[in-house]
Length: 636
Image 1 (cartoon, rainbow, N blue to C red):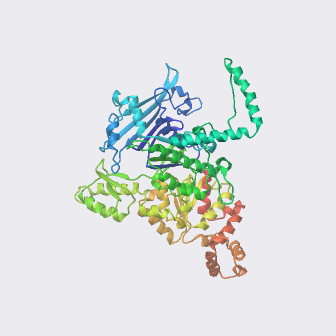
Image 2: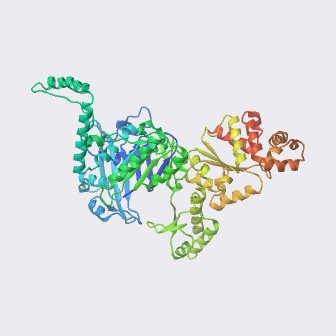
Image 3: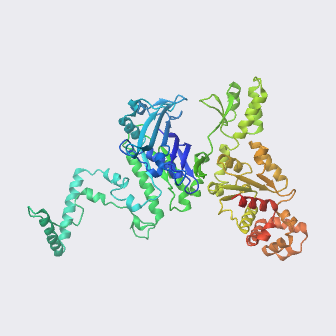
C-alpha cells in the first residue's frame, strides 16, 4: 500500500501543491524551497500520535503570504493522501478485508484509500485543532463508521512510517533511549539459563572489584548515611556497584566500536568522523526498520522519509548510497542536495522543487502524456511494433505517449485513422501529442545519459537556467566572459552544458522542458547548426520553441574562425606559440588555423584566463556569447 499522490494546501511555503509519487521519489532544488515541507506534511499526516487528542501542526505551519498575515484567520491546512493499488501489485486480501470500511474503488476499478488531515484555528477552544477523515473516490467523507479511531489505528499498522532527519547525532541515535537503537536492544532475547549465568558472573566480578581496594567500602559507608537520613523510619544502606546490575543494564550500555584500518585501534563511534557517524546512523535506521517489519502482518508496506541521507559523505559514498536506498522495502521519499547522489537516480523519480513568488512549485518528467486520440484495432497492431512508446490509457481508453516520437512514427500513426472523416483534426491531435511529448525520454536515452551525461547530470538539476554549447572550448569561454562582465555563471545558478560531449543537441532541451528550466543554445555557424536544429524539430519542438533560444555564430564560422574574424588572430598566434612552438607566429593562415583547431582547448583555456580579467576584451568576444551573458545579467 503506497501513496500515489499527495495534495498539500496552506502548509508552510506551500499554498497548493499536487505531488505524484513513485516507489522512490527524490526531491531536489535550492535551499528553503519546500522540500522538507513536503516530507513534513506526509510525516505529520501519517504520525501515530495524530488524532483528536493532539496535532502535529503549529501556527508557524500555516501558510502566511505576508508579515501581517494572521494564521488564525488563514484557510485551514489540508493534507490529502491517496493510496491506490497498482495493476501489477494487487493489495493483500487480508489487508483489504481488515480495512474494509476505508477501501473504495477508484475510477480505474482499483482499491483506493484516501485520507485527509485538516488543521485550523478553533475560536471556542482557542487552539489549532486537527481532524482526520477518510474519503470516497469522489473526495467526499465516508460514513461515520469508517472514521472510528480503530480504523485509523488499523490503517497506520499497514503503513508504518520511518523518518530520518537531516540533522543526525550518532551519540543520541545510538543511545538506549533512542527510538531506533533502544528498540533494537529491547528486542534482544537472552535464554534464561544464559541470563542466570551472566548474572552470577556479574555479581562475582563486582565483588572482586570492590574487595580490591578497602577505600571503596569506606566510600559506600559514608554515602549510606544519606539513605539513613532520607528514609528516617529504618536503617538505610548503600553500596557501590562497579558493573551493571543485570543483563538489561549490560545490554543497554552496548556501544558500537569501529576501526578504519588493521593497524588502527578500535574506537567508539563518536570518536570517528562525521561522515562515518552519519552513515552508521543510516544503517542503524535500516536495521531497526527491518527488525520492526519482521513483526508486522502481511500486506504491510513501510513508508520511509529520508532527509539528505548523503550528509557528510564523500562523493563515491554518495553515489553508491542510491543502491542502499533502493534496497529498502516499501516506498521512499528522499530529499538531497548532492549531485553525486542524483547522478544515479532515474529521471522519472526526480521532483524539482522551486520557490516562485514565495510559493512552492514542482516540476518533473511524467511517465506518459495523454491525448484525445481514441485507441482502435489499427493502433493496437501498430503499437505492438513500437515497444511501449504508445499505450492505452486504462481510464480513458485513449492513446498515451510514454516517449517522444518522430514525424515518421506520426505519419504511420495517422494511417491508423484513415476511416475517420476529418483527417485534419487527427493530424492536429497527433502533432499536438508529439509536441507535448518532446520532454519525455526513451529507455535508450536514459541509458546513454547514465554514462555520457553523468559528469553534468547531477549538477545541472540544481541550476536555475541552462546554456547549451557544442564543446569544452565554448564552455570555458562563456564562463570567462561571465566573470569579466560581473556575472559569474555558477554563482547565478546558470549551468553551461557542452552537449556534444554529454549526449546530443535535443536531449537537454527535452529535459529542460520537462523540468521547466529556461534554456538557451549557441552553436557554430557551419553545417552542424542545421543538423542540431533538425534534431530539435524531429523531436517535436516547433519553431516558436526555438525562437530566441537557439542562436549561431555568423555563418559559416566555427569558434576558431570567428575569433580570427573578430580581430584576435595576433593574440591567438601568441597563445598558440606559447602552447606549442614559435613557428605559430609566422606560419601561413591556413596552417595556423589548422594548428589552432588541433590545440583548441589549450588555446581557448589560455584565452579565457585573459578574458576573465579584462572586461573590454570580453566585450570583443563572439557577439552571441556576449549578448547572451548580458541578457542573463539584465534579467537576473
